[in-house]
Image (cartoon, rainbow, N blue to C red):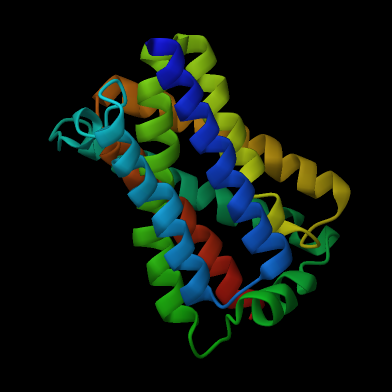
Length: 221
């Protein structure tokens, strides 16, 4: 029975990430359409799968936990500083101008609507990713596949899922560095949630990472 649940979970992961790759890398619709598709894939489908398969849980990791708030907040602020610091440190050595052009041409993000998009990315998009990768995938994979494999098979697709949206943004070396950073970040988020028994810990930290990225995006636009 658990093997069927594992197959369904992995199939949903591959399907959702593949569709988002096509949307981000090929179709490139406006941000509202892309966001609606992501909500369906990363939130509604897991909820439907959990109703179809009792072994797939979407409730336990959504329980709010008071403990760990200050730790998550401190980590988030530190991560904000690290990302901005890294940008200012390596910025003079790399050309980031293509990022602004890609955001405008492919996603319709401009200086005029950037505030609304950045708020969505920071609060809603970060929750969708935490719900799907750290909550639905990691929490269920731990029970179906084991702890070590759960770390890898939730953090790796989280990293690869970003590939399509960042094509052409960076040089090959910097792109590889970003992918490794996302992989390590996904594992750290898993560990944070595992320690505090809730996805809200990583969601808060993830918000600050997005705050930093949005700050950089605003400067580029």
